[in-house]
Length: 81
Image (tube, rainbow, N blue to C red; front, side, top):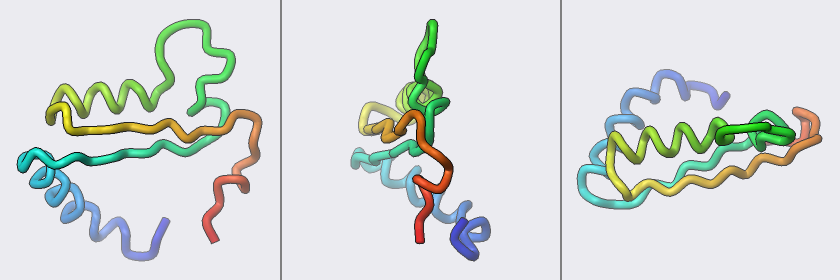
């Protein structure tokens, strides 16, 4: 996690609510491995889709989600240096 990010989270969330209220689009991306990608899933949706659907239902249609997960990768694949 970025240093100090947890202290800024409430302000960021409030800012995003104002963005949605103004009718502007917000793009949310999920990163992860096979669980996020929903590899081998038998039924239902990958968990990021549930999040996108919930947020769209709560805040409107100006929310766009991308599941950038790559199944079969190690955690280090997603590391940001």
